[in-house]
Structures are given as structure tokens and as C-alpha cells.
Image (tube, rainbow over all chains, first blue to last red):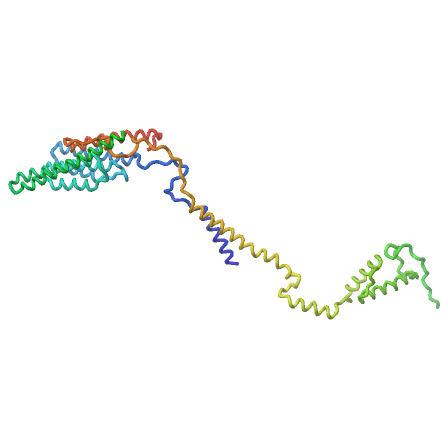
Amino acid sequence: MKAVIAVLWLGLAATAWACSVERDASAPSATRIAEPTDVIDQHLMIALGQAKNFHHKAKVYMTDGNLAAAQAAVREILSLRFPRGAAEADDVRNDARALLAKLLMSQRQLDEAMRTVDEGLAQSQRASFFVANLYTVQGEIHEARAAALDASGEPGKAAAIDERHAAIASYDRSIQINAKLQTAIAEDR
Amino acid sequence: MATTEPPERPEPEGDALTGPIPDPDAAPTAAELAHARRFAELVDKTLAGRAPPAISADDRALLEVATVIRATHGSASLAPSRQRQAIDQALRSPAAPGPASTREVPPRRRWRLAPWLVSGASGLVAAAAIALWLRAPAPVGPRRAAPPPEWTSRPADSLVGPIARDHAGDAGARIDALFADRLDGFRARRLARGGTP
């Protein structure tokens, strides 16, 4: 008789549990209108606003000739937190890397400039005009390296030629990306 | 000394059951004596198990009364063979109340199945509820048309366009344009939603 009562209670408990348990909170509600997750929200606007302010800050430092402070302001942009999946994040960071590389080039820090560009290219999720711009800056860095090698005398001539070839390759890559994107945009319109 | 005989009373009208009740000191009539003798013989035959197959209704009523009176006086008893038979039957029955109570088993068997039926039904209901919960498709909310592209996060390529080499470092100008464009979309969406972000 105890076993019968136990089975009875077990069945009732299972019924109550099955009726009262709540669905997964992440499941979409039947009464709530579904919202796309990629709409522009406050988090994206905050991130973009911060990037804008850091650029302005860097511009002021550049006007004053304080390039180190300008570099620091631009590096702040690279550490900004954007909403997950925001397409603008890649673009903003790549543009900041291009500016940072240009600043480094102006201070003859060519290796650091090249490292900054290479990191941006490696982290890019897709082809864009900003990626093409990074290739353009990369080509400029190769040209700067070639000029430096030329200035070093006869031993650097061969390396300078290689740098110029690399610069041409970078510019070609930039042109290819731009052409491909322009074609795609024209087809979308 | 001469004894006085009670006066002989006339024959009562009606039968013994419906007639008037005689005086206790009145002498019985000849008809009453004959009826008494005949009824005594009938009682004796009935007690001996030799009751006549047909008797009058009045005699049957009187006979039942006589049987009840005899039983209440303790004069009635079972025959030894009937006594042994009843005792043996009572001892063979496992239940103390006796054979009559043990015949109530079928209804009790039915009630013993009731908890099993209730528990089984509850288990089936629980299993069905769990199965429905596990197999129920995810609720599909009402879908609204996709928001305008201006409201969405998207690449800035169409806004910026190809970046000329002379403007490779003009990131500040581009972020201004990008921020202004996204702010327009954000405000338009917010206004469309009644001011809620």
C-alpha cells in the first residue's frame, strides 16, 4: 500500500512539475514582437561617440605637435567595446589603425607602423574600404622602408627594390578590394 | 360439600382469532376443547417434523405464535448433528465474523484496485504532459517586417566609399560622418517607437 501511495504522489508531483515549469527565459515570447538584434542601439552610439571624441582629441594633440599623446588617444579607440556583431566596430578600428600607422610613420617608427597594420589586417572579418585603406597605408610603409634603405647606401639597394615590389603588391591589393566593393555596391543600388 | 361447576357458556360467534375474548374463569366449550386437541396434535407433528402439507390460515398463524413462544422459553434447540455441522463450518472459515462476512470479498477486491487505477492514470497524465512539453515547438512570435536599413548596424562602406591615398589618415572626418549617419538612424527608430530606446 505504501508503494501505491508513493507512485501516486510521484505521478502527481511530475504532473505539477510539468505544468508549472517555466520555459527557457531566452525563448521568444508569443506576445512580444520580435526585434532584430542588429538595430542601432544606445551601446553602439556610445561606442561611436567615444571613438569620435578620441579622434578629436588626437587631432588637437597633432595640432599641438604632441604626436605621442595623439598616438595614445588613437590607441584608446582600439580598446573600445562595441556591441557584439556590430559591423561598424571593424571599420572604426581599422580606420584608427590606419591613422595610428601614419602617426608612427611620421615618427620614423616603420616597424611599429607595419605591425599595427598587419594586426588590423589579421583581425578583419571582411573586406571593406577600410581594409583597402590599410593596404594603402601598408604600401606607404613599404615605400618609406625602401626610401630608408636607399638612404643607407649601396648595401640596401636590393632590399629597397623588394620593399618597392611589396608596396606595389599592397597598392594592388587595395585597388582590388576597392574595385570589388564598388561593383558590389553598384549592384545593390 | 358439593363443588360448583362453572356455568357452561354458549358457543362464541366467529372463530378463535376474531371472536370475543372469553372470561378466564369460563369453562371451555366442547368446540373449543376439540379445537385445542386438534391444534395440540398439529403442534406436536410440526415439532416432530411431520407438519401437514396444508393447514388453514388461522392454524398457521397460531402455529407460528406457538413456535415463537416455545423458542423464547428456551425449549427450542438444534439437533446434535446440526450443531456439529454449524460448528465445523464456523471453524473452517478464516475470518472471525463467520461465513456470512467472508462473502463480502468481491467488493473489497474492487476497491483494492482503485489506488492502482488512480496512480496509473496520474502517471499517464504526467508522461503526456512531459512529452508535450518536450515536443512542443518553440512559440513563434508575430514577425514584423524587417526594420529599415537606416535603423540597423551595418558596414560603413556605402557611406564612406573608397578612401583615396591622400585621405588615408582622415579617420577623424570619417568617424564624424559615420556617427552622424548612425545617429540619424537611431533617432528615427526611437521616434518611431514613441521615444523608447
